[in-house]
Length: 234
Ligand SMILES: [Zn+2]
Image (cartoon, rainbow, N blue to C red; front, side):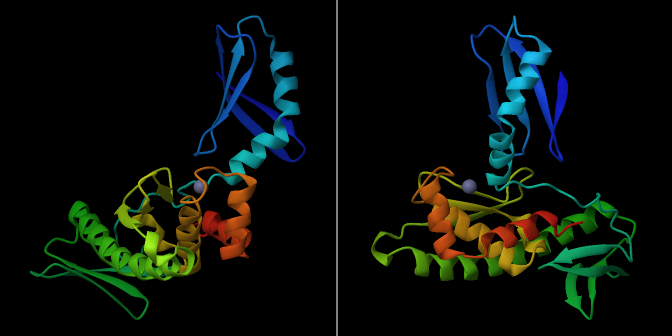
């Protein structure tokens, strides 16, 4: 069941479930969701008290995750609608043509297509365009940061791109960094921040103090950039 408590100015929402366990467990997921499992015999007051005592830890965990929160309402793919690219807003212009193409110039993203009402094709063309741009920009920034942060002798680091709904980036134990193509809509600085964040995970696969020290070293202004990334779509 959905519950919440007020902690200072923050409302902490959580999913509460009861199970056969002795102590209360709190899990903070990458999408900031808080899941609480309580023993069958615990009362709501007891649960709330415990959540309250853990509130600052929960908020810290939520802030630590580099998660993806779509703040943009769904696009309709009609002329005049704004679409983001590298942190700037562009108007969409649909042009009827036998040829299919996407071009960016003078404040417009112009999509040429056979049928201006065919939203699915327009969405497909735009997504393909975003992917192409992401491939170009992400690889340049990735290469730059890898060369700065990782000694060339043990650089087996690779980059992959994917549309993801929950994360900006992922780093796995095989040294592969996956970036969300959606990031191409954010300012370059934010893309670079996500890359540095993920590359720091090559040294620490957690969000420990050492991880943040390393991040601080390679990206001193990361807190502001992270904030910008999480709010740029508003
Ligand atoms: Zn991380």
